[in-house]
Image 1 (cartoon, one colour):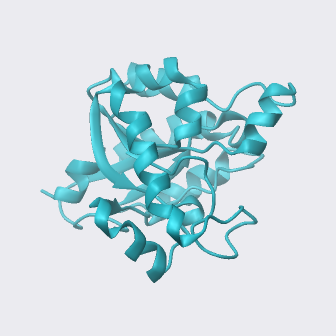
Image 2 (spheres, helix red, strand yellow; image 1 turned 180 degrees about the horizontal axis):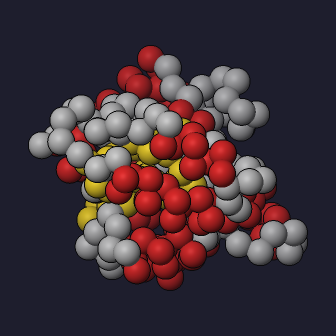
Length: 219
């Protein structure tokens, strides 16, 4: 799914929570402070904005309290972004690649990690880097997941200014859009600064943030 029906006024704000072994090593070594941007959660909670979080299993294990906070908000949905953000295809942003026979197990393991937290759990899944091919899709078919890409890419990973993120979203967002952002603070340091302006721009356009499930359902 790249977007929902182009009817109504709903758009989905989605936030990926990546976590690789390299990111964990950076945390342990003190090279970075955090891959959990709590300012994003603060703003969404304060303004009562729905959102959907695509969680990696390793991020959940590293940030169980933040995961509980997300799961405890009835406006937030939880979705699957693999266990350790490895690539499911070749040539995917230099990510290490999982063999095809390991793909389904990786995704199933992530659902198992997320499940105990409760909340609004979904069967939505997003590939790292949005990289997928027919073999990857076939491998995941038995799991009954809905693969979600997105039609509005914020470009927030490693951004050094917030204004380009706002333009990237507001120049392309339409009814039914799925906006891709990240909650990984150290790797997406400008997202929390851009988000208030994105929300204001949506309101000016008559668009309303909604859970991904409602956007895909249309209406």
